[in-house]
Amino acid sequence: MLELGKIKKETEILGSKLREIQEGLVNLNAAVSRNENTGVQILQGDGSLILVFALSVVALLFYYKSKNSQEVAKILTQKIVDAQDTQLMNSVVKELSEKKKDKEFLSVLRKIM
Image (cartoon, rainbow, N blue to C red; front, side, top):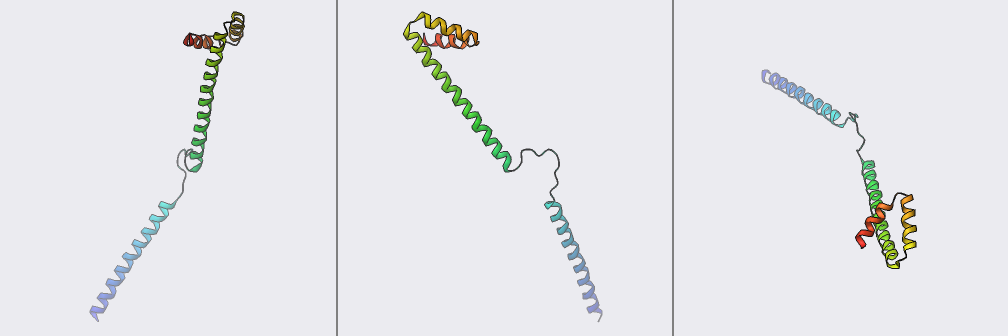
């Protein structure tokens, strides 16, 4: 009878310890799964990935467009020089100087000549 009481007490102690451990795990899981917004969270999730991808595509489009424009300007300048028409050259320089683009034209012209 004494041993039975002792075993019963030990099982009660083990049961209470097991219960404490299980409650601690439940509390730990609740703390981990809690979604609290702390701080600035702008670039998180799929939206930021889409935003970065879209901005990089737009930047690449602008880069290639400006590169293509420079090539067209070189070709046009070469054709103007090849034509050896001073009146055409003066009218182009005059028009570009009004639009404040004459420095770019003259730099392309120097590269060609």
